[in-house]
Length: 127
Image (tube, rainbow, N blue to C red; front, side, top):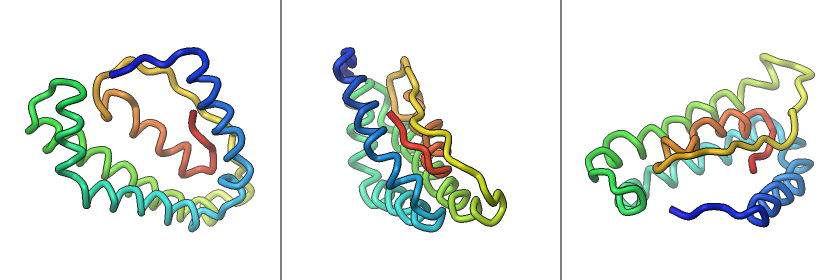
């Protein structure tokens, strides 16, 4: 696992700001398609992600395979469903903007990957 420098953080925020207008202008349906696609790609490559996760953080493969990776997949698919419903359920809602999170974790689950998915669903970008 690597640590981000100040330059890395600035680059992530700049990239998220650049993506914000196009991503937030997308309909909930369009954002849902992207989030579903990420979830499906993760499902297709679930074994690879589990191995990489175990190598990255030293967890037993069964924990990465049976908990961390499936949980991340479920979050993307769940929030894709929310993205589809937002326009109808919350008309006039506006994205908040760029969302950032400083984390101290060792796995996809610990790193808050799932915590950032709702922001993407609502049209925000993530740094």
